[in-house]
Image 1: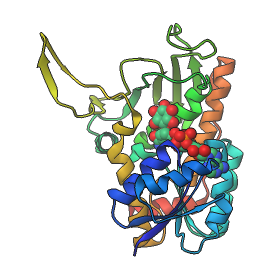
Image 2: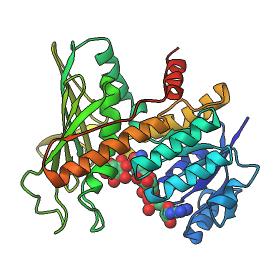
Image 3: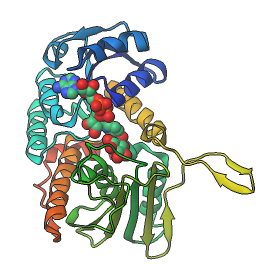
Amino acid sequence: MTMRFGVIGTGAIGREHIKRISNKLAGGKIVAVTDVNQASAEDTLETFGLDATVYPDDKTLLADPTVDAVLVTSWGPAHEASVLAAIEAKKYVFVEKPLATTAEGCMRIVEAEIKHGKRLVQVGFMRRYDSGYVQLKEAIENKFIGEPLMIRAAHRNPEVGENYTTDMAIHDTLIHEIDVLHWLVNDDYKTVQVTYPKKSKHAHENLKDPQIVTLETEGGIVMSAEINVNCKYGYDIQCEVIGEEGVVSLPEFQSISFRKNAMFGTNVLMDWKDRFIDAYDKELQDFMDSIKLTGEPNGPTSWDGYIAAVTADAAIKAQNSGEKEQISLKEKPAFYNKQTEAVNA
Ligand SMILES: NC(=O)C1=CN([C@@H]2O[C@H](COP(=O)(O)OP(=O)(O)OC[C@H]3O[C@@H](n4cnc5c(N)ncnc54)[C@H](O)[C@@H]3O)[C@@H](O)[C@H]2O)C=CC1
Ligand SMILES: O=C1[C@@H](O)[C@H](O)[C@@H](O)[C@H](O)[C@H]1O
């Protein structure tokens, strides 16, 4: 059976997902779109050849009985209201990060989902579907490097606009490391601290860039993540896990090597859209397939969105205090333990 999607937010990533569902993945179809910029929503019909209805807002789109699931790809501050409305309408939801911009907002979604009684929501933490990170996790779980002790990560963007602020380094950029690093080692965060190296001359006046975020887990693993969003040379994601018996590293993005003009080299990507293209495909294919198979999505949960929000809040506090800040999570509801057991069974 085809899953009929409504799309809330037809900007950069909304369009990427429309394209992959329409042209690349199996079992999905876009039947409805909306955007506060109505012209953008209308434009997707022609650009992607969609046979879809354009709605004025998320509420009217959700009232369409032909919509089985929604993609929430609007701006972060709009996510919570659309996700809660989708749960109320009993529709499946694939929501881009962040699930909500506050921990309290994420908790409202968790509570609504639990009240509904089965999982409806998947959060777009696509790195969990990237084959490089999956291989790292397998190596850690197979004890290939013994117990993991430390992680060194880097998240580098070529440049950011004037509207990118110091706290966005945490809730827009580091949020991917926050999600994937604790998942890799299956441990909970305990503390976070932020330090600022010498400022890059490419960072605009009010932006502190680069930043070093140090996360410590309950099990004592120390993770150092460099956020460097004006590195100029490319979009570069690094991750090295240092264990008692060895070290494993995230593979470089595959590209041809070249010999030319007395140089030997390889290309570095410039755009986030290309780096995790397979992972974006896999997360949405899994969303559709697992709902068809089990009636519930199988990927990152609302609880994962809550963990990321609490950790990001503590990291923003640490940006301002310069101190080591505590990360305090509420107890995980049994509802999400049950889901994890079912997935692992
Ligand atoms: N997983 C990933 O790697 C990435 C995730 N994202 C996330 O996806 C979301 C969207 O990001 P972009 O596409 O880059 O932003 P964008 O600014 O290109 O697009 C956002 C769109 O949402 C629309 N919008 C805003 N409020 C709305 C509302 N209440 N209802 C309907 N439409 C609304 C805007 O008019 C705009 O067209 C963000 O939360 C961002 O963090 C973005 C890029 C990569
Ligand atoms: O999610 C993303 C963007 O919103 C963010 O701005 C970038 O820094 C990330 O690399 C990208 O994956």
